[in-house]
Structures are given as structure tokens and as C-alpha cells.
Image 1 (spheres, rainbow, N blue to C red):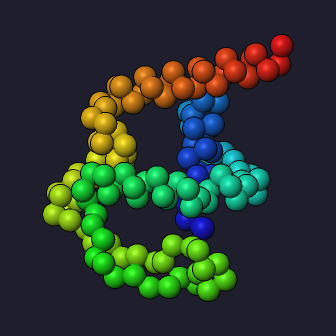
Image 2: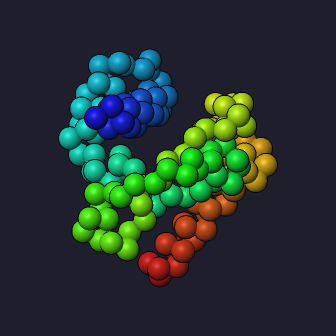
Length: 141
């Protein structure tokens, strides 16, 4: 539930900042609360829930960085009871390298893995968004 609240308040704060700037007035915390309540009511589950694939990609990056290592311990998962071909539950441990990594590195392990700076990451995100906009524009023509 706290992830839903954080998402709603982040969206509400950004919206109130934009509106206040556009209207030339100070930011109103009551408007942020009101917007956050509205966003919470309308926030779909998909917008806040972590997906299995996202976890797999994130965790494989941690393994590639050498921040986690398998302990060798495995056990049957509840999912395996119904679907025998499923992977067993595996246990991992945090390595010294993982402990030494900064919060900034942990916040975006892909950027750490590929050695991108914040500016390079920002530029890549802009390029990616531009490609999506172009594709959408071509679809509507």
C-alpha cells in the first residue's frame, strides 16, 4: 500500500507544481492531498505492482555485477507443486562487492553495469520516448 501512496503523492505533487507555476501562485499542500486522493482512487494495479519479468531482469543484472551469488540451497516452490517444470526456489547471498555498492548504483544497476552517466541515461530515455512518439504519430496517420 505504501508504494501506491508514494506513486499517488508523487503524481499529485508534480501536477500541483506545474499548475502553480502556470498560474503564478504558491504550491498548495491541500490541493496536493486532494489530487493524491483522486489518483489513489483511479490508480490501476498495473501502475504500482512489480512484475515477475521486471524482477528477473533486475536480479539478473545484480548477478552480472557480481553483487549476489547463489548459496546452493534450493527448495520446491508452491508454484512447482502444480507446475513441475517450474524453477525451484533458489537462495542467494549478498557479496562484499554488493555491500560496497552505493545507493546510487543500487538505484539503477543497469546504468552501473553499462557505465552510463546520469546525462547519458537521461539522453537515452529522451531518445526512447521520442521513438515511441514517432511510432504513435505514424499509427494515427
